[in-house]
Image 1: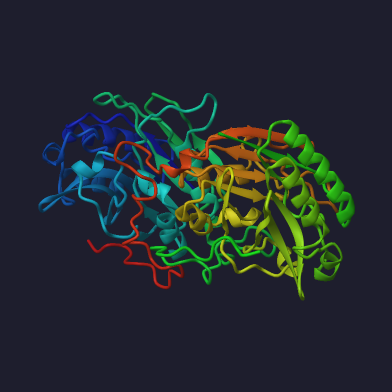
Image 2: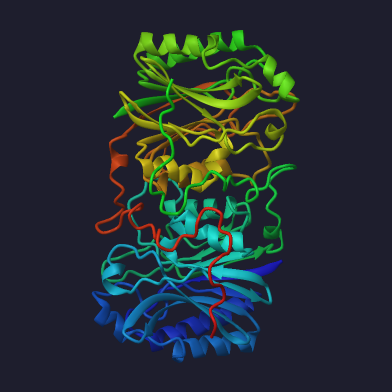
Length: 283
Length: 283
């Protein structure tokens, strides 16, 4: 079992130095709770609600910049794995990225592929698949927020053998029917269940230029059951759960069923679905 | 808006004549509630828990058999669309099928493609895509139960323009954490939300050879919010909701985002995912 902590924080907009400090405190608090893997929100280094790429660039850092350096020192000092969102500058581009860091340093950078709403006016879209990183706690993968809503994308690390999918997110609040679990949480549960792969989504709080957030940090087991998390929360909070990363190696969901082996790849169209198969059988 | 009724019934095992009568009564009750589209459970003509194909065959009927004839008369008489699961005999095969029927008669038969657990010892697997049927209430599609747990499969009718996905199901009960919504319902909500396509899953009740059921009939809107349904119910019940089938034509989920157009088909691997793309970026 692996103790995983997701730190639902309120970053300070446009202030990477303050956010380095805040995240360091949060990571240390998570470690004091026993965390072996710590997750931080999307763009926690910078905040989210940028007007344009020029503004985002002022809060962006290279993957060998100070924020990654601080996080790497924390990972080494506490012998943990750390997955966190950051605003990445790379030559002329600014990406909405997630870093996977362990005691040996930066292991992978993933650049968000599916850009939500105005993000496409701010960030360049990534074009790399979710990484699969062998760590001391198991094979983990990462993607960012809206990526989770594309089941094709979640399948990639799941089929490649990821034992845990860790997603920094910033879920903007939107109207929801009274009493129903947020749609984003429901989709995370389904992502997990149809792949028998636990998923951790670490959300943020703290109003920013009029945007508020679901505050829906959630940690599921391999079947998609919620082990920890909350929703409709405005609070900075650390959610902790004990995750069984060994469980996700076994894709059986019954005596004869296997949620991956039962896929009918012989029948699925190619990714572009250029012409949907036969419709409306003649009778 | 379209009034849709899902009739959560308890079929009589191995007695198609009794089930024809029971379903006729249920359809008439649904019509009296205003239903324009009526959904019945998986294998409602026959029951579910067959030992083997030979036993299933004794309760199976051709697609031009008496059950489809009765359902077709009901659809014509009440000017409704009817989607129902039935045990289909076709030459040497027995399929776990769903019929789409409207006042003009049988419009499509879909044969379950993803067979759950012991079903593979009883039924032949279908190899046809979910049909897309133009009806008086809109373009509808259907699949059966476990099919819903394969997002690739749900994408097919969604991308082809289905305005509603209707699924006869038989969800066997399994242990679930106290107070959590059944995993099957959560996955239906996600199927709907990531496609902006309402989904109706019509479950069954009534213990059968030691198998009991979730009783989790659910009707969602295009965003996956639950409009009607129940769970952990042992009761025969008709759940009714007013569904906006026009809503699902619009895949926008914000000012700039479109849940289908935002798919990165340039990056998705082909259906077989023979070799997952680059993993663990070098740093």
